[in-house]
Image 1 (cartoon, rainbow, N blue to C red):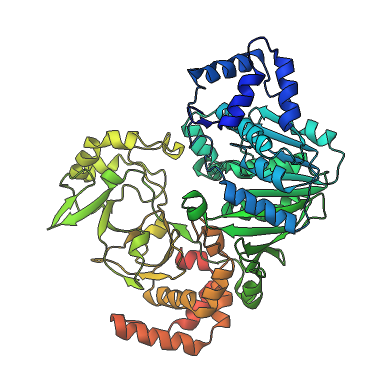
Image 2 (image 1 turned 30 degrees about the vertical axis):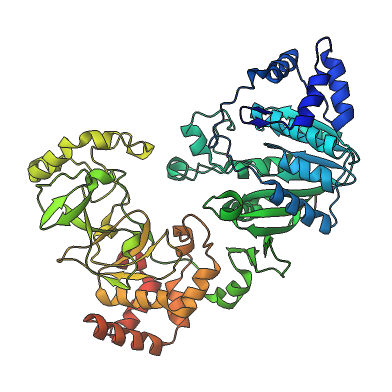
Length: 585
C-alpha cells in the first residue's frame, strides 16, 4: 500500500495491521516491532500510534514535502550499497553507527545488510514523512531477511541543529564507530529565503568580518556546518566519518584545517557522477576521514568507480593552500603577493535597467525600452562570456556608470545629464527592489566595484566563472574604457605596453601551470581574487625568459595592429618593485 508519498509493501502492511489491531497497547506494539526489526520506540507517542492506525484504515499520512528545504538529494539504494561495500573492503565494520540526517533510510538499510558487527544505530531526521518511510523500509527488510544481524535502532524525529549529539558521544564505549550519511546540499541563504526551520541559529559561524560577512562569505553550506558539528561532537571518539558532500565543502574543510586543526586523518575523497546518481549539476564526492587521530592537512582524491591510485592530492603545502600539490611543487617560485591589486568588475543588481543592447543605432534595455540618454555615462560592458577572445576592443552590451567611486553622491546626474536622470528616475522602482544590504543607506542608483581602476584605458581580465585560465587584453572602445561586470577580475593600466607585458606574462605556460595548481576548477567561481593575488608579477617576470616576451610582443603587434614594443620592459619591471600601487591602480 502507499500512504501519499510513503510506501509500505504488502507484508509490512499486514504485519502492522496485526500489531496495532484493536485492543493492542502502544507499549506492547513497540515491543513486538522492536523484536521484529530492532527499531526502539517505533511509536514515540499515542498520537503517532493513532496516526498509523488511521492511515492503515485508508486515511493516509499527511505529507507536505519541500525538496529544496530539506536539501533533497536522496541517495539511491544502489549507491548506498556501493559506498558501504567500499567501507567493508577497507576493513570498516562498525559496532555503533550514526546518521545525522537519515532521510528515507537508505544508508541505514545498506549498513544493516553489510555490517555484521553492528550493535546500535542512531539516526536523526527532521522530516516526519521520511521518518515513517525509513521505519517501514527497515521493517520490510527484516520481514524479508529475518536472519540479518539486528542492531538496536534509535530513530529521532528532530532538527539536526537542535539535537544533543554529546549524549550519544558520551554513551559510546566502542572504538568502532561510524558516522555515515548524506547531509543537505543547500546553503544557509537558500534555506533563509524559504523561511525554513531546517537551519542552525543565525550566526556568522566562520567569523567573517565587515563586507565579507554582508556580501556572501557569511553564507555557508549546510552540509559543511553539519560535518563540522560531527567533528566537534565526536572528536574524542575513535572511528570514521563518511559523508556524501559537494567538493566545495571538502575544499573548505581542508582549507580551514590549518586554523581549526580538527583531529582527523587519512582524509580522502572519491568523486562520483552527480548527474548520473542525483541528476544534479554540482561536483560531489564521498568524503572519508578517521576521527580522533593526529591532524592531517591534505586530501587525496580518487575516482569512486575505479580502484586506481589517487588522481590528485590537494591541501596545505609549505604553509600554502593549493589545488594540486605535485604541480605546485614545480611552480612554487611564482607564488607570492601581487603588487597590483586585482579588482572585481562593477555590480549593479539591476540588469533589466542597467544592461543595455545597441540595436540598429538605438540603445534598448532589458525591458525592451528605447533609451534617450546622454553618452557621457554610457560605457561598453563586458561579461564573462565576452572574454573568450584573446584581445577585446568592442562590447556587445553597454551600461550606465552612475558613480566614479563607491558611495559617491549621484545628485549631480540631474543637473549635468537630465536625460539620463529622467531615465533612471522612471526606473527607480527597479533599483529600490534590490535586496542586497550593501545598497542600504547609499545614494540612489548606486553601484559597487567602481573606482579609479575602472576607468583605466587598458585592462587584463579573466572570467571568474569559466574553467579556462586564459587572460584577455581589454582595449578602449571609441576612446572610452570598457567596463567589466562583477563576474570578472582585472588589472588596470595607463600604458598599453604594460598591459601587453602583463597579458603575456599571465598567459605564459609556466604561469598557467602555477595558476592551475592553486585553482579548484570545480568551484562555482573557479578564479577568485584570493588566488589571483598570489600571482606575483615581479617573480613571474624574473622567471620567464626575455626572448619569450619579445617574441610575443612582436606577434601581438602584427596580428592585432597594436603599437607595442619592448622598449619599456625594464621600466615595467622596476615599477613592479618600487611603486606599483601608484603606477597602476
